[in-house]
Length: 199
Image (cartoon, rainbow, N blue to C red; front, side, top):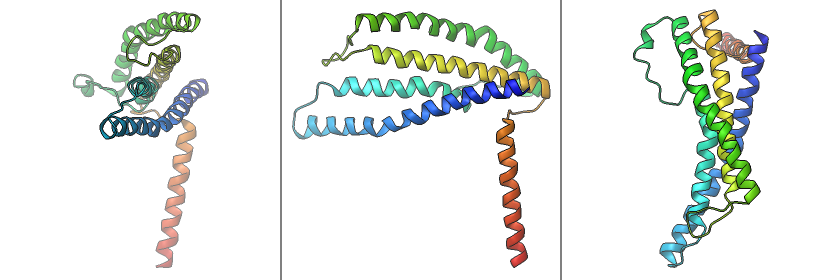
């Protein structure tokens, strides 16, 4: 079980780290859009680069955010049928769907897109849309990295479902996180006892 927990922890830490880096690009996106609006409507002098920068920054959030959203359970999930099943049955069904749908799809996307990324770096490809036509190979690279992170998070989710199927627990909590939660609860209970004793 410790290998399972360690694998999940490593994958989820990678995705936490990736999203914590990407979130700092939000102010850059906002400033880019504000600058474009001021230049376009205030000075009638729109920029050539704002459109490209905007879609590239948004694509970083989307690509890197997919894995983190999966980790947090934020993707659309239709569970009308499986909500009536036991925890073990739900976990088994989810694991089967990951194996027959998720991994083949995202494995193929990640695999074949890697060739496209390498080709765009070799040819130093530029964007085909917009007027600025910036280099597109960094854009392709972070789309591929996002696909890879999503695939890895899929592995973590599958391991969680395996854990749920074995243990019958409704949700997966990392043993390290569980210890922290127990410590926080103990600290709060002690503070409550101290406050009650003083009163």
